[in-house]
Structure formats: C-alpha cells, structure tokens
Length: 159
Image 1 (cartoon, rainbow, N blue to C red):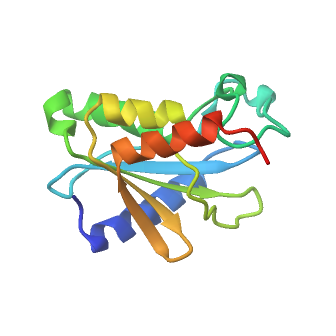
Image 2: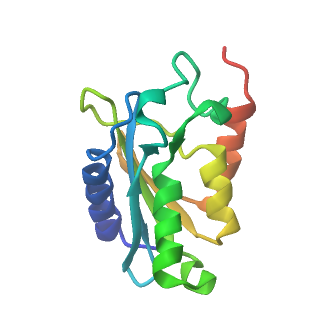
C-alpha cells in the first residue's frame, strides 16, 4: 500500500492528466503506482472519435457503459503500466490513483468511480488499491471493494 504522501502526489498527477482530456462530459486522469512508490503507468480519458463524445448525455454515471465512446483514464493507465513493466507480477499490489474534473474545472468529489469495467480490470490484473479524491482529502480502498461498489452502482435503479 502506498503512503499518504505518495497518494496525495498521485492525486495531483492524476488531476494534471485530466486536464489533457477532451471529453465533453467529464475529464479523468489516472496513474498507477507500484508497491515501491514508482510511477509505472498513466493516462487520461480519450474518446475514440471526438465527434461522438459523448453519447451518454442524460445517462446516470456508472451505467450503460457500452454507450461510452472513450477509453477510460484507468484503462489507459493500466494498459500503459502493463506495457512499461511487461510483467503481470510487477503489477501485483499496485495502486491506481484517479481524479476527475467537470468541464468547468471543478473537482469531481464522488465515491462512484471507477466504473465496473475499470474496477474489474484492476482486480483481473491483481492490483491492490484504488485512491480517489473525497471531500475529506482522499479515499483509499482495496481494488476488490472498488469492484463491489461499482457493481452496486451499475445495477441499482435510480431513486
């Protein structure tokens, strides 16, 4: 598990990466940090076809993900980490740090990410933890808990 200092630095890097996204709905950035506090992957959400961003207008976050035309920041960061280290064992226990920005620049302070697809990928790659911003500063949870929470969001009807 990464230290508080590394988690906070990771959040700053993820926010900076989010600024590079051209997504019209939400901009996200993510970094992957190994168990030795080394940065091994990074990315931001990227629509496959910018003209089709975003087909999810009016759709609740975390649902109907098949309508999203973007690679998610977490997916890009995990893929870049795997490409860089070239070894699944080196990813074991690593931490994904993700941050988001609204189009107007306000920070995304919700506990409803990553989506179920990205959380499933974290678990499949044996990553250990997820760090995300929260009103209290940040929240660090095990990857398997992130998946469980994402599945609840994806399968719960809006109230």
